[in-house]
Length: 283
Image 1 (tube, rainbow, N blue to C red):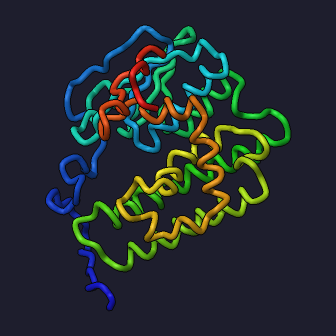
Image 2 (image 1 turned 90 degrees about the vertical axis):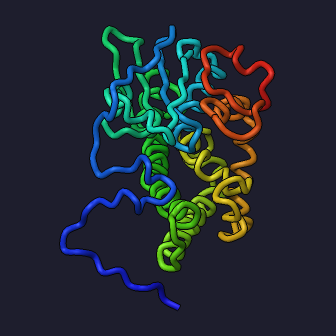
């Protein structure tokens, strides 16, 4: 049976009571809502984030750089609680006018550089350290898969995830529409990974670092409640192989818990300032 038809008004107006789970923070306007400076640590790189899929991209990248011996990638990571609206504080908005995590402040040069949007952070760090982004003929392939993920995430998170798990009402059309697109994206990845060890080719790159945090939770069944069964994720054997291979990387195991503020306490790390902060943690 089709859902009841919604007749849009001639002019849309904001209804603060009709925002679902995130009604307390969503607004049709941008900018700071309070004067709130950001904390600053001692390292060149200051990361302000949360361990959502986009946030985990940045922490995995930084941990991978450190694992590869790039000591200059040491960083301070500070939790931005998006449920409480920390992303609308003046300090954070100065770093990211779009008020989304993650945001990075790079103080390694003569002048501080702000970097926002997770894909931009991955590219900035990869180019700065000459790692996880090839410079030969495979570069275009890696960048294509990186931006495939950047363009796909809204369909999976704001699309499928929102209507399946967070919307105040569950309607057939949007859930089916975004379930279909999510499965199509998994199929794209599965076909690619049938022919290639990693998304960009034979080497692990920023393309894998970007896609893993979005795809892995579906494979492990830890996102959107019963979505793994609903979407028949078991059908994508090549994706499952790739996810499990990446999940064993030490840097990935560390990066996934940085700025994590939920779950078991020994899998949370609200702030990260040195490798010693992982002592006693389960990762």
